[in-house]
Amino acid sequence: MPGGYLHPGETPSECAAREVEEELAIKPGVGPLIVADWAPNPGEGDKLLFVFDGGQLTQADEDAVTPDGVEIGTWAYHDRSQLENLLIPRLARRVLAALDHRGQGGAQYLEHGTAWNGGARGAESAATVS
Image 1 (cartoon, rainbow, N blue to C red):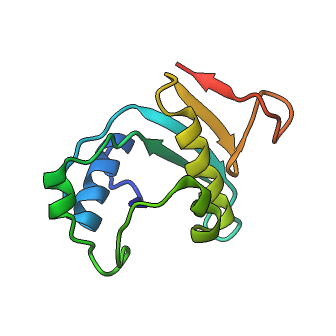
Image 2 (cartoon, rainbow, N blue to C red):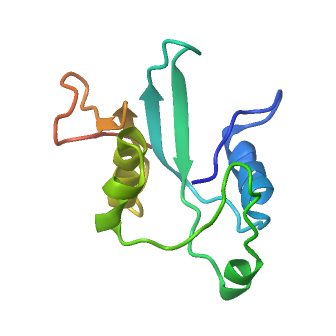
């Protein structure tokens, strides 16, 4: 999953577009924010991670995808049932939450990949911001 750190003066959506282009060599556009996830990181400091809707790739985009070979070695489509076996747990939770929330409007707020409802971490109901 393409991603990275903001450059000075760059917005999160600009960063998402740049990272997709750097890591996959395509410019498919960046859709609405679907997940904001707070992730603890004792070594580097906590992070706020954003997942934007990347839409559906066109055949031309698929044909043009060229993984950078550094951060992304290969790419493929996978069934959602495979994600927990392919991704580290916190990333799997974030991607599954994004898939579940996609198209619902607004953004879902997570804490370490788990929906947060304003008081109880891991509760089934999620906070949504518009």
